[in-house]
Structures are given as structure tokens and as C-alpha cells.
Length: 282
Image 1: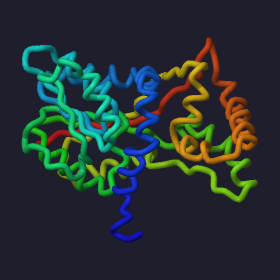
Image 2 (image 1 turned 180 degrees about the vertical axis):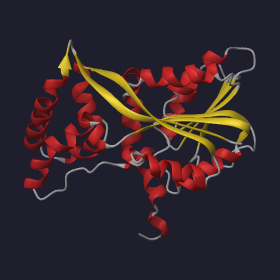
Image 3 (image 1 turned 120 degrees about the vertical axis):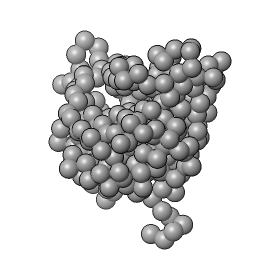
């Protein structure tokens, strides 16, 4: 891979293309699915008396907006940063008139010239696992934190801890392999599965008082939205549109069968196994 095909360029292409647009169209679905994590980050900001917050990998802005609303109208502010132009465009649209309390940046937090010693709290809901150079990225975030500023991010644990997240790839694999194609592999979603690896990254980036604790939250996806989840989001969302109708229908049938045991009371229910990762800019 030469410099013209760096991983960060690939990520920009993905999240500014079909993947980014699919997430925009599924915004309300994803907001509902991950609401429990948003609530956790909002509560932490309030308990720590945050006034100026940076939300990394903010996507379409749900957590950014929730934090800004929670901080109130008396000077609290939350800034969201994300690499995806379509998602940031929607986030800005959702902000409406609340422009004094919320601001959005379309760029990579690893390299963006963030203001020095600005934020008293830096948060993320599943937005920090995709950096090309995570030490550089977390060092850039640390210099943007005030002295004593806190880091509070959520990242996935491993695929073995999140079997429901792997169902789609495993159910589709036999159909793809039979046609000589490669089944979709786990993406950077699980890059922070190893707590020791995460700790080493943060220490190298200069963070102190590091805490990495398990965080498990129950999630529910409406059964009526399962096909959207399977066909529009994740690696399969980029593969299925290019398949012939017969094979696509066969894969979808296998996917629905794989998820059936997890459907209760009209929803696909699963427990998301994550890390709650904290640190301080001492």
C-alpha cells in the first residue's frame, strides 16, 4: 500500500460514500439502539461538572446534542468532530438554532489542529477505534484538554464478547465462500478489545489515571428494522447490493434465521460488551 492508498484515506472514502449515507438514513434507528451509551456519557459529563466538551467520532450528532442540551443554556458547550461529511451535514441540521451550545467539525481528530487546553471533558461513543495512529490521535486529544481535563470514551470489547455482532458475517460466510468470495472480516470496530493494548496507547499519548472497566448495556433493535440493519450497515451493507438477487435473498433468509433466537417482544435484543475508558490530562 503506497501513500496514495493510506488507511486513513480509505476510511474517508468509506465514510464519505455509501457507508456514511447509509448511517445518515438509519440515524433514528442507530440513535435508539445506542441510547443507553449516550445516557451514560451525558450523566458522566454532568457529574464531573463539564462545561466544554469534545465528542470524538460524533457521527450524526446524537451524543453531542444530548450533552449540549444537558449542560444547559448558561454557557455549556459541546463540539462534535467526525470524518464523514454526510453525517456532519445531518448533525448540523439537527442542531437547529442551538448553534451557541453546539458546534461540528468535519475532519479526522487524529490530525485536526484542535485548540490547545480547551476542553474539560473529551468523550466518544464508538468513535476512537479507527485511528491510523492511535497514539498520535490520543496525544492530539490530550493537548486539547485543559489541565485536569478528563477522557471518557466507550469502545467495543472483543468479538467473542459480542457474539450477536458477529452473527451476520458468520451466517453469510458459507454463501460467499461457495462463490469464491471472501466473507466480511471484523473491522476496526474491535481494535480496542485488548485492555492492555488500550492502556499502552493512552500511556504513550501522555494520559494518566487511566481506568479501563467493563461496561455492558442491553440494546434492542426493532424487529421491523432488522432487514435495514443487515443490508445497510456494516460490511455486509457494502457487499449485498452487488450480489445477484437469488444469492442476496438466500443470504438474507440465513441472516433472519440466525437472528431469530434473539428476537423477543418485537425486538432483537442483545447485550453490548464494551469498555468504559477513562484518563486524565495531569
